[in-house]
Amino acid sequence: MGGGVCRLSTALHQAVMQAGLEVVERYNHSIPVSYASGEYEAAVSWPAGDYRFKNTLDRPVQIDTIASRDGIEVIIWILA
Image (cartoon, rainbow, N blue to C red; front, side, top):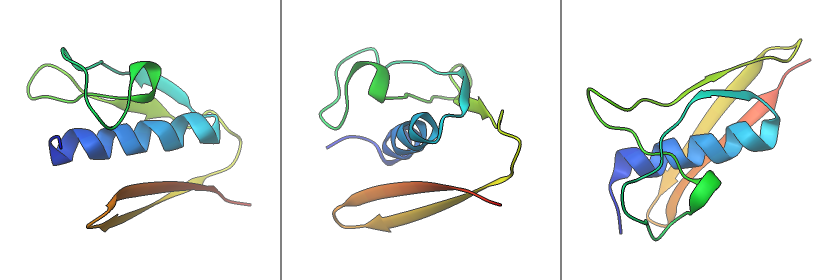
C-alpha cells in the first residue's frame, strides 16, 4: 500500500490519459509503487513535484472521484 495523495494523482493521471487531455507536468516515483507503473503513475510532492494537465478539447470536462476501501476511481466526463 502506498500514500493516498499519490494514489489520487495516479488515478487522475490515468483518467486524463484515457480522456485524451494534455499532460503538462508529471513525475514518476523514485522507487516502484505497487498500484501502477511507468507512464501510468504520477507522483506528487510538496514543494517540488506537481501534476498538471490541460483541457485541449473544444468542450468542457467534469471530473468525478469515488473513494472506497477498495481504492480511488477518477472519471472524466466530456460534456456537450
